[in-house]
Image (cartoon, rainbow, N blue to C red; front, side, top):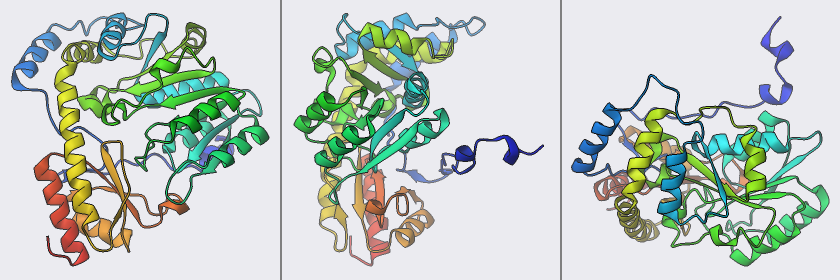
Length: 358
């Protein structure tokens, strides 16, 4: 007996999610916050982690972390919270709960690749609706697809990854009104989007749940995502969540960091300022088209993305090559906004690759 005889054909056709080796590189490929906690907070956190009860199973619902999230982000008591091992686990939980025979998951393209992959994992029929050539939402096409496919589940990233733009709010509201099933607004990049959010709209739409992560805010190593919704939705999703999915160390560290969320928010504000500076520098370069971003990364197009990506890597700069991932991403690269010296190193290397003066 071989894997080919037993593994589902749609799984065999997939490629595993690839994470590049960043050893020794200026790492600007994964939308991470480049800043650590201040030294005094790191020392205090170390003391708390030292006393963590790693010999015991964690609180199965991480109640203290939920309370810290409510306090940090103003989540009303009327809504329940469910935690996941990153947003990825939450996407899989929601998809698994709705994966009836023949059910469809709809998302725009290009967007977060895990929507499509998890549709395959869970046996959902995937429906991808292309964005416009400038990466704006094609509202008419999305509404047509909703009418035609009647999806049980719609994922919309706000702002979108990998394009960085925040879709027009009115269009998202009309999609919510038209959708026959659940709509998940994925706000992974909320910290950089100038307050754009649907958190206050949960009461208006019975078919809306919200998803966020603390990864982009500076806690990527903790792998902590959270879903917010009306209790009836969260209660059903919680049945699919594996027990003890948030470990003891993550719970201790996340609770501590969220008690100092103002530090993380100041870092996010620094990155927004750096994003604007980096955007100006990219826009000034010949043969580079940079796309407006409300996230902590910038998508840009060059004449030959494969060559530029390889050249940057040889120069010790790791970004993300999106060429070949979707037709709309032809010759596109994505760079995470880093610390000033990292951004300067990236611009210098890019100028060298393009034969330009820095």
